Length: 290
Image (cartoon, rainbow, N blue to C red; front, top):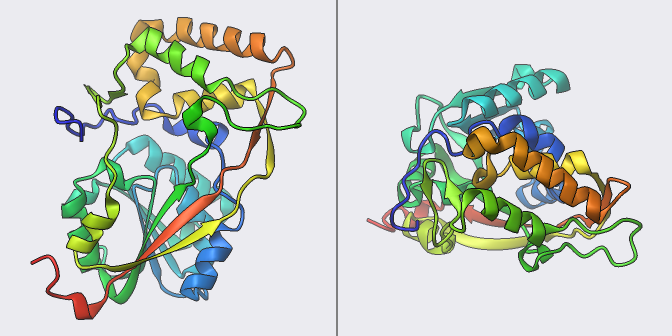
């Protein structure tokens, strides 16, 4: 993972309170797709690994009898706990502050494990082996991520939607102006970004699959300047603590940039789709990867 980078507990420090305001929601239909593919009926146990503030876990709470969310960040666990209380599902949810590498931590056996855009932050071979041991025979690991969007090319397509696009490239350049050209990650940097190749990792661990399922996106979304600012501060590479004493100056420059692009303070985006890769804990693969 970039050679020089090692995980530390500041990776997402201070970002939790910005997640729900700033992050784009997952594609509508994600829960229904998982329910159909996995024949979920309100029973069984789910562990969401790298759960953040509980976005995915809570969206699936009605499909399981028990939900366990695991995340190393104290702020994320606190947000997930508050949201579960607010949604009236505190009685069927448990939130554990721990690294995935430190599981199983007496949590028992699960029917489904989800990783929603979190696996790349972990010691993946180690965690894959741990989670396979925590899944019942025939249990499922679901790797969930947004489909690639025009975020990588600097905009998110808005076509004829009523407001300007979020100026992603300009925001990235502003972040670099304050934090330098190499992507920040906690106390370290990620000069080569985060790793891919999940399929090879999960195959080595003895999982069978994958089956790929796409949840369509494309729905129009309206975003405010506050949403966009919160989105920036929800990211590991632009977490508030990274700016130190320049945080207020950065936010002023960011809001000025957004005001120049959209004097109304409103932006249009299109909902990204999602993809789900289903991997099964196949007992016939018990010797794989040994």
